[in-house]
Length: 425
Image (cartoon, rainbow, N blue to C red):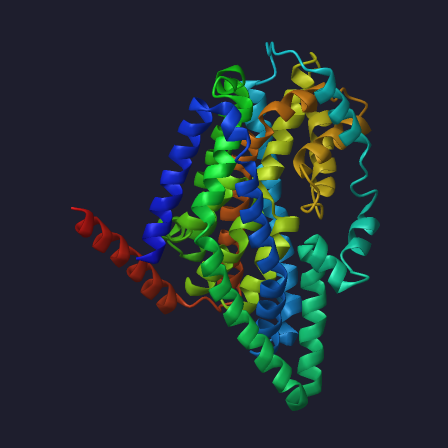
């Protein structure tokens, strides 16, 4: 009953946020702290939850030797899927041409911000990306929310526990308890999700107004169409290949998906998504490795947006990119979009830097700033769905997916839904 009630509460919060944001815009802008408080509460969960879950998943099951194999398979899958996301973004951008005939003027402030974004250094080379994976201080990594660095530290910590053996069992027992405590902690924090979502949506509508949707209609439609296309083709086929019901998966992750959409924050949905994927039949160690790694290397929605955004930015200034130029930009985005999930407005930073590196105007980034929150809601949701699908694919690839656990969990969730419907009737 808890899951069903949370879904209903989040949906009601979404509707109320839109209504209040439209009816009282000035008041609504003051509600943003509600969203910030909720996101801060989520962030305080992530580091201890991720560390404890991954260490217990690897060391507790004696799977230390298999983590390298899982890592290679995970990165291969990520590269294939993100490449397909880039291709879909380019195809939709070429078909709809959202930047052609775009008539909105850009403010000097937005243009200055976009120019500054273009100067932000993301990764100078593949070597920099690899070096940044290894933390100098795990405390600093946890404070900054650098998920990939936490994963690397957790893997080495788990390997050391396996090597020490029986003497390390007390530490493993403590971390197992910490993992259970953090999942319960997550449940408590989720009680505040509707309040945070209400504040996020109301302040967004209050600041931008509903009228902004019509001004940017072509851009918004192009992105959401491309995202839906990616989900219904690529992610559906991925589940089909490994013999998992995509419909059942979407149904079970509806709560974290709504969280991701309404807050436009991957972090807000991560703890709940990890808990659900473990209940769905994916082993703890694979969930603990694939999900956080995916938020660095498998940002499907953001990657697709970058391809579409690059075309939009060139189309509004009358630049028609050749096929070869589009391929070059795609290859650049494949590298620059990796490993920067913790940077604020990361997609726009990457887009501005990539355009600048090809000596192209960044005015398109300045224009996209106006609706970044609305676009971010869609791409963040697809990032989440893509990473949930990734955990299932890798678990199936490793022959470790628990179909019996999945069927039991899905039946339980559907039973809760049927019970709720009957109760409402």
